[in-house]
Length: 89
Image (cartoon, rainbow, N blue to C red; front, side, top):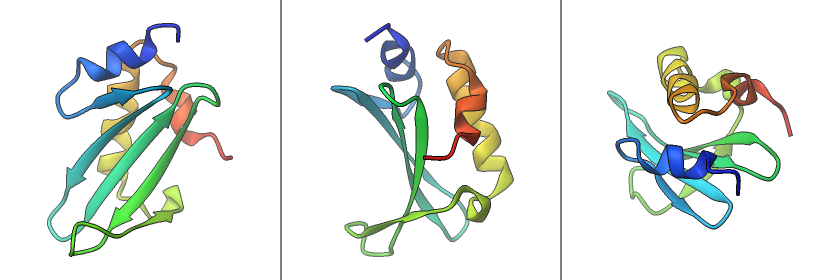
């Protein structure tokens, strides 16, 4: 680890474990789990169902722009290139 996960872990809501960091966001009607994977430098979005237990991966084009912008801001604050948010697997 180069410390980038430590930077995310210090931000509100983010939790780092191993080679990944995760945060949960709730919008008006939608709930998302966002994961950053350090080895591949990519961000994955999961939409969480109403039960809070089930999540399905979703394409970033389905994620609201304000949320994506906030994730890029968080990455930048942690010292991670915010353009990794746009990287496809």
